[in-house]
Length: 572
Image (cartoon, rainbow, N blue to C red):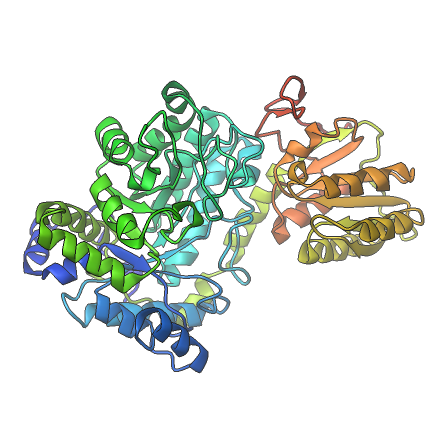
């Protein structure tokens, strides 16, 4: 079997290959290339009864191999809940099986295999893989070279698993602190930060022949609602979009991003009809194609998102293509969506020229990734190529460089690693709090855990307060507590016991604006294991080297609590 190393070099062109293939394809084969969806099962030919039942209900097939062959899919996307994504050999075998099905049926076109492996809070493949601490952590390092290295290490692992597209990076400028979609998924809140770091991420992924997907065009940073759960509307003016949001996408285009994801954001200043960007010709064609001169692949965000609840399946798929989109991600009904596009072409609502335009982009993207020459990976080598010492070192360095100390006014930090010291760990995250407790115990202190979770109940807060009274120090883990009054109440009541309290923010740091008097506030911006280990090291004296990637203000926006680029150091 051949692997990525055997593929044609990135950018190698065979001008006749795409054209010849395009001319040989039937309309059904062409339309199939415009769709990307998921299949259940850990293998392409799964016979697992549960997976088979789910595939039959959704698609009328038993497994992913049959799905790919029946609908001539252009791509598949992996999810933890649909495919077991823990063992490298299993993932590689799944990829090989799906590629084999694609290249031995119909027009014999290889697949784009996609995953959301952003790092930080959006991770599909965990251990033994080396996982990035996330974009805001990388932004806090103020070192785009580190971002390049982290995304490069991520790409090395994905390609070894047969995955050739990463739905990353997020290049939204997080101008709204109440943003429920981005937050710590963003590099920062300034156009320069997101543009520079986003371009570095694109180059890092594509240096190892994994297609980058810059998202979420035209920018979700000013909105509040996650489009997975509802309609996201931006009230920015066109001038504000051009100032805050477009620079990062312009930089991603200049960096050579293979794909851009069109979001379901409604932006009246950019399209007064109220159509979401994914269905908006003024945004996709008018801005992305004509203004930014982008001729790469445009894919929608998931078409099953709640943000599109007012649109039928037909309106979603046909509308996206009419807007200028090339690939349609996760329609609510695949067979119905394909039939809708075929009907639109046959009726003249969509021209064959328009279909060919997008299919050519899909095929060109696959050629650029070398998939026509090599789309099978070496399963035996997959485990050795995922989670290498060098990859883990890269991610650990990134996590360490991003830890930011915002407050230490009481001189609480650093802690002394004395065997008799009692430290309470409480707050957010079952796994997060367990991991941090173990890390503290490894430092030689007596660490105990009282888990309260998100939106802790009054009873859970009371239990943490009782435990804090018997501790020498308390560490309260918080995650986006700017939007969770109960998390903020937990921190305040633990602090009121008089026990020296450290708030450890593993989400965006905006909660500090709600409690600027917090004496000790440390941020990792993520809760991957490397970030928690880095935080533990800083608690016990390692120098915090991160700087705030955002400006933190009071909730009314009138007062600055922490400036962009601020951060404390220990005085030796």
